[in-house]
Image 1: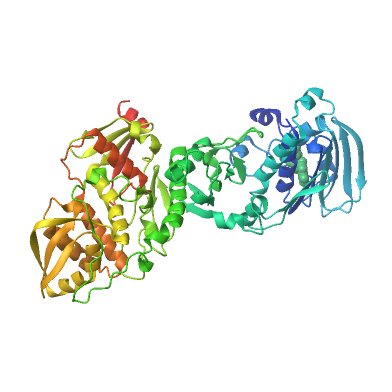
Image 2: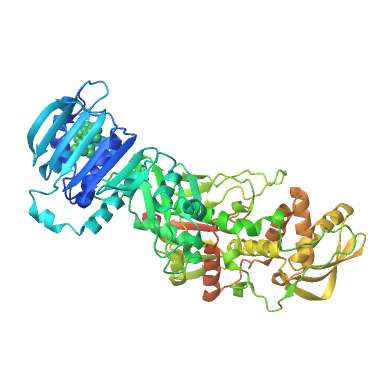
Length: 623
Ligand code: ADP
Ligand code: MG
């Protein structure tokens, strides 16, 4: 059966017309995409003089019937679309039926093609749209198209071509865009009889390595981390460079549904995820593949354009940024927050007797608002989930432009203890955070900080925001036994029940690491002589009781679990309370430190920190 049909004019007109073939690279793109549309598993590209004299593409795809071979060169002849609405669900690449017609109008084209059910193939030769030869031929299954002397009849075009070097670079760039999404297809690229690329079929990773890496050194595998996030709205996967491997020159590739795309806004999301990790003139390299329902993107009608519009770019921005951050967080922070293999401190477990005290720094002037730089902000855990081994990457579900983590019930190291951080939300609240310094903000009701951002009004719960910030600081300090201690003038006595005493003995090294100075007084009491500096102004008794009770109730029985509880209790107690008025510097400091955390939509125990009112919503209220 012949499969090519002519599009009705009405449909053809709905398709934006345009110059398809502007330079050798666009011609190559069309030819290779046709081969892939034809299900080729092997594609050879042969180029001479950067495509000026020869561009040849040989594939082992389905080939064409004799009739189709002829029809293929007519304008709007295509086997890939019937109705205009097909445009919106189309996943194949070529869809306009214009490429071959355009190419043969400006070059000398010779094609041989054969389907596997046909014994003979077809040879067609066309010069500037005139068929000069058409005959049966003997040829392998698949299609072999030779485009010679491009623009032979369009001197102006020819004149506008750049140097061979530039055109060859354009050819390769275009080629990369395609071959990176077809790792299962093998490709070769030959220029002036020299094999420039030999790409065997393999995984995405191997394809990237084959193009950009030095296979002997495994450059790729050693300098990239994998990202993967599946949501109802979009699936994102790919590879992002480790910050320390980044350079000024970067390979930055976005693909959506198997097509390369440029997307400055999403680029911003990736850059933001790296923000503080790279020197200002460095760029992250990445290969990121989006999978999204075709209805959710504005199909790129013009084949030479690579920009694509998404239905909900803000949400995808958030998902993308979170995904990259998570990957980077896992990679950069995991060694430092691996509680089981802490090498930096060595505290013997209390057995009831004397316990050697870890080094504790005293900072009597400690002020939670002025700790930038002293608490290793860049080493703070970036992601709550990534603190735990065996925790799957957060799976996001998108609901009304909110992203909700579903990594809800994970077990921490085989214990029954469950983090309360059952879900956290990334709301449309992570705006271009570097600029946060400049957004107008004010305090409302002694409880909330309102931030006016480009995308709407961000409302932040000041107490919870501070809990999140402090939580990570405390965790970090616990890991390094670097809590700042404030000596108490009048020691207090903590009386405990027998079972609580056992727990307290277990927690003692960590309580000391964070800045408590505790000494056992009797079989059922401790004397408290010093407290973490952040708690200097309050009675330590309720705090310690709270910690012990929570650890007990939750059955936290590994160090990672009780450290988390200690950090949370301390954070809750040390966080600025409601009703405290904040000056502008304090607000900015808090917001900026909050937004440096990778998931800050919720507190570690799942309470909402940030709520956003978009401009649309605001306007709707007044409509
Ligand atoms: P489009 O790709 O938009 O359909 P083209 O002008 O690029 O338009 O190609 C026209 C038709 O020719 C295609 O729809 C396809 O049926 C056929 N064709 C082109 N190249 C190949 C190929 N390499 N293998 C098999 N069929 C091809
Ligand atoms: Mg095509």
